[in-house]
Image (tube, rainbow, N blue to C red; front, side):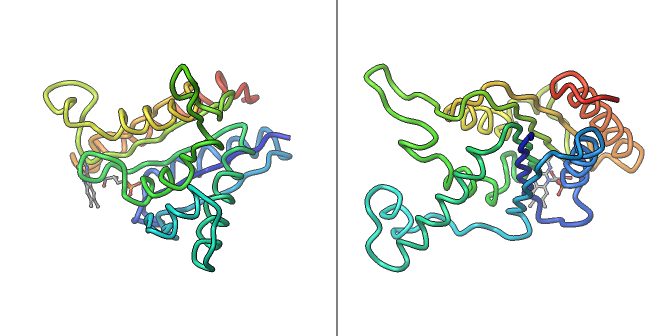
Amino acid sequence: MTNILVVTSSANGLTSVSNGLAATLVDRVRESDPSAHVVLRDVGASPLPHLTAETVAAIKSEPATDAEHAARALSDSLVAELAAADILVIASPMYNFGMSSTLKAWFDHVARAGLTFRYTSEGPEGLMKGKKVVVIESRGGFYSEGPAAAMDVQESHIRILLGFMGMDEVTFIRAEKLAFGPEAAEAAIAEASEALGLFAGETLKLAA
Ligand SMILES: Cc1cc2nc3c(=O)[nH]c(=O)nc-3n(C[C@H](O)[C@H](O)[C@H](O)COP(=O)(O)O)c2cc1C
């Protein structure tokens, strides 16, 4: 059975482009493989707490207080969801040139020394190897080429975080120019949907 973890992170709920594209991919997977187990973690609708003194204490050493035990349990459950996934789908709206703070909080909870990466005498080693990852990025502007490309810190940050945890088989699918008018937005969503279809067929090897 294929395990799929879908992390969505838009504050826009039902009108979110990245949520919609992630849902399209999940529908595609379910059609092709009804036995696929899909876990939806919507940190946009249900944000995770930011790291606090309790959280850091709880994940760096043995938790002592009730708050530390709760923080450790939350982080452990998020790491377990990630560890169990064969396929990770991340839906990331661009906010202020980077990922949303809700998605960053998810990374803060799952990037755990000893669990998702470790330090060795050779340097850090990612422990979440062998997963297929697709990152859907929705943006109002256009960053794929031209002068604005240097302002895109969303994709590089996500790539670094995933790579640090050992996930280097990552496909990025961008829906850009969403603020350039309805026609541009419609074309961008259609193009991203098509790219997701290709990803499903080629990388996930799903039947058409
Ligand atoms: C708080 C906020 C900040 C944003 N910052 C940017 C930005 O820096 N660059 C950009 O191209 N679009 C920006 N946008 C536009 C979003 O990326 C765009 O609306 C995208 O569709 C959001 O994804 P979603 O539809 O999945 O929510 C921003 C939107 C919001 C709400």
